[in-house]
Length: 466
Image (cartoon, rainbow, N blue to C red; front, top):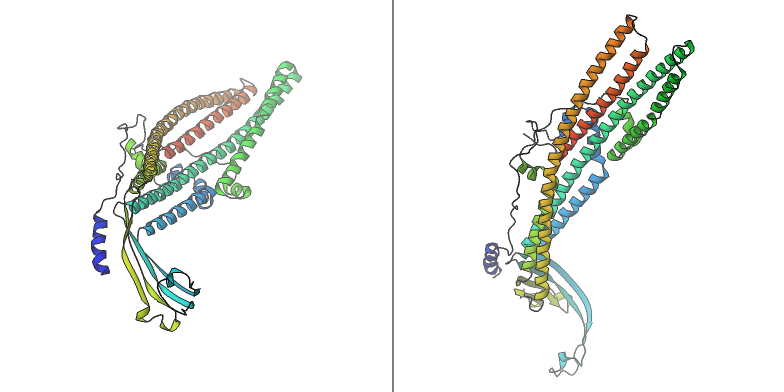
């Protein structure tokens, strides 16, 4: 009998389409290509490898393994998966076992004995019960399926949020590391400039004592040295801030990070820009866009759930077991009980509430759709701005490198004149000081280009396979 009932009902459930609209990615107006120049090589998934710095790679690996932000995102993903498992289980049949032993007393004046003329009825007895309860909601209108669809979409959103957190973390570690290496090199240049200004001061002091220069020139040399020395503490503070930020990002002690970073090292070269691909590729590459789409998918399923609440809900319920007032006869055939049959529920006088719930879920879907469109527009703007900034920073760095080369030529000429005895040493020191200042500008421009390149990778969604 169970098989005869279950087979047609199961066929009907599978054949019935859930109410609501099946999700489809919304149409987004995207340009055919990006309006910014870009390279033609797709970056590897570990996009930071393009910078060619093993210390940076090690720091990103450590941050990925120990960052509290990632641990939080991973915990939320596990929670979402568990909640999805709970919801998926709601759509299947349930079977519960139960048992009870109780001491009961009946009322002689109750309706149980109203039509039974027994002189001395037995009122006290022990009742033994054991059995099973089963139920299965026949999801004709997709109530459970839409709930499972929403739960799966929210799990997907949590997974994409974890990917986005990883991308943001790697980009932040790379940016901070670039700042640290830049600070180290700027501090080296600053210390060299201090030595140059000290040498200029000594030459000026000697010239004043010999009567070849005025005391005003000496005061100016002292002022230049004091003013430049005042900039060094700010560089040291910035260097320490970068170091402590790396320690926070990697969840390590500052001393341990400092040991890994080591002494001042040259700033990495600026690699070529990666390929931007097509604007439509961003919908699949950027984890934040994928997360926004999963939120939209969940909101669409919520509308279906609200619609299904207005339809009848059918279930198969049944129970079977044994009931006896004597433990020795509990499992006999005469003690058996069972019940099996369908049941349904249909909301009749709360339609106003259910209609309002449908409107609320539709409004939530519209809000999710607007958020998705906004995220796409912001992603397009991120790519445009990142590539534009990188191109302009590289253009500026090229101009500064050209200026540095010219400054080097002036220094070489001053040294030749000094060696030939045509000029004093002061112009040589001044030219060396100017070259150091120019190198500091080039270093900052290189740092800006590297930071812009990191922004490009972040805007593109990280790296991807060819």
